[in-house]
Amino acid sequence: MADHDAIILGAGAAGMMCASVGGQRGRQVLLVDHADAPGKKILISGGGRCNFTNIHTAADRYLSANPHFVKSALGRYTAQDFIALVERYGIAWHEKTLGQLFCDGSARQIVAMLAEECAKGGVTMALGQSVSAIEHGDGLFRVTLGDRVHRAPALVLATGGPSIPKMGATGFAYDVARQFGLSVVQPRPALVPFTLGPEEALFQSLSGVSAEVEVRWNKTRFREAALFTHRGLSGPAMLQISSYWQHRTPINVNFLPDRAADWLLAEKRERPRTSLRKILAQALTERLADTLLERIELQGEIGNLSDKLLRQAGAKLSDWAFVPSGTEGYAKAEVTVGGIATAGLSSRSMEAAKMPGLYAIGEAVDVTGWLGGYNFQWAWASGWAAGQAI
Image (cartoon, rainbow, N blue to C red; front, side, top):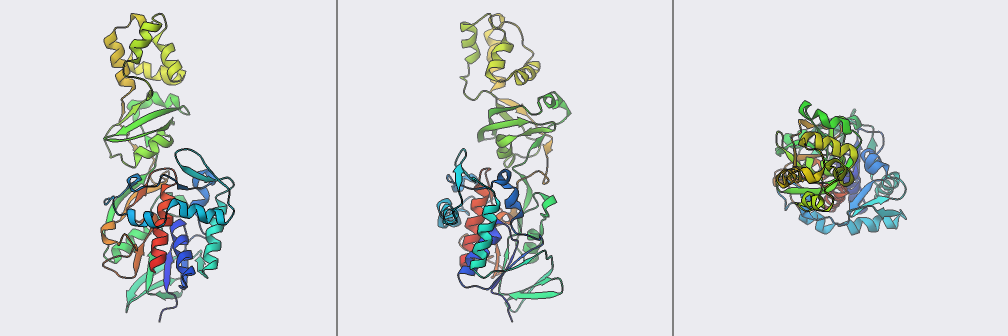
């Protein structure tokens, strides 16, 4: 005998969305989380202001083994739909850059809104409780919390991926998925800073320096700020490209994305008596120019340098190769690439084909958005889709 219509594991963005939508459709929903309060990852997002969506949301801004999988859910619950919900609650917001929307106040407003939406749907919350066993039989999932067994015909996996383990994140969703015959695409940290090896130690002196760059890996490019750290490379541009990067391959950085290929030759004609260092310091910053010039090994008045050498210097500055030694791992990763394979899920309802009644949503699934609110929009859209189906 079922005591709920659906049990949702994980009271984060996707889980709360799913619970509120299901509950408001009249379903008896139990929302479970091992944390003592809902939405913990939401609270730390966007520097505490929650970059809750992106107005440029589109399928091509997501990584997945099946890039078409996201289209149905994103098309049925859009950024505008979530904005409308935020505005119904009177939460003030602003666009920062590149379509990124943030709360004017605090991320707590988003968590409070979702908690209120769950309350409107009569959702039962079981917080601070760990799942000790999950079984299935006679069309019901049996979830053991402490010494109590809860039964429901629908079970939703919304426990995210292993990013930010200090907040209690684990690969729990993958274990449950495998238990019921679903496959998992090998997970790895994404939206994560790079580390550089000892041969790049020169750049450690730049810790704290940032610059607007274009970073490239294969054919994928991002133009945003890059930040040098004492361990390597960070900043939005680096976090973005990290989701695509594969181990032991180079990333290429254009330090002067607004300059023409032969800009140094033009400078030579216009001000031949000026030192190359001064010209680069004006185009970049002194610290960055000095460090790059140390590698290029060119100095003196620009008029005394051959066109060939200047062309080579310009080419290097616009396509500087770094080979990261690795990344800072799940501890610093905002999200996870990989996860429960989309091939086994319905793109419309998020239900598992092999296991009717089992759903997977949000970051637990092999769908990863760009930096800038895209992962939240996937959480809302996939949570809404499953909430309509449970």
